[in-house]
Length: 200
Image (tube, rainbow, N blue to C red):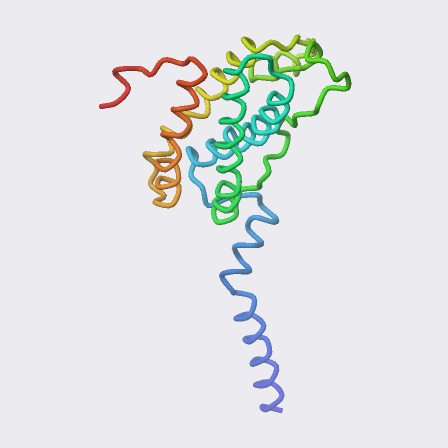
């Protein structure tokens, strides 16, 4: 009788210890509670930048085919190069920090039905919020509008990289510092002005 009791107790203890695997706990934490290992600033970074870079890279690929000015074509090529280069590392960092990637609900660039450039729906943050409020409208494509769009969106992405460069997570901080200069160059290329007092 004592042997059976000890055997059952041993099986229960083994099952309990096997269920305490830290890797399983991490996977279940993300799977069932949707919590991540990223702090608030890092999570905001993933939401903003992760939601924009995929859209911007796809939009830039489209603009390369329809732009009329060499400046817009060069900018689109640079945007595509920089953001397409960031996406794989961003994905890896999201996995390590247990953040869902690609970002759910992020805008997806869809090539317009008509092949002409006049029917492109250039979506930036302001028009997305405007459209979300039930005020969707089409914007005509122009190289000047694309330059403004890139400047506007890159300013937001640059701000997130600047914030992340001061994060306590060493991997995220290193990633931000490695890519901040590239994003700042895009901002300047799109016509943005660097703030002379931004660097302390």
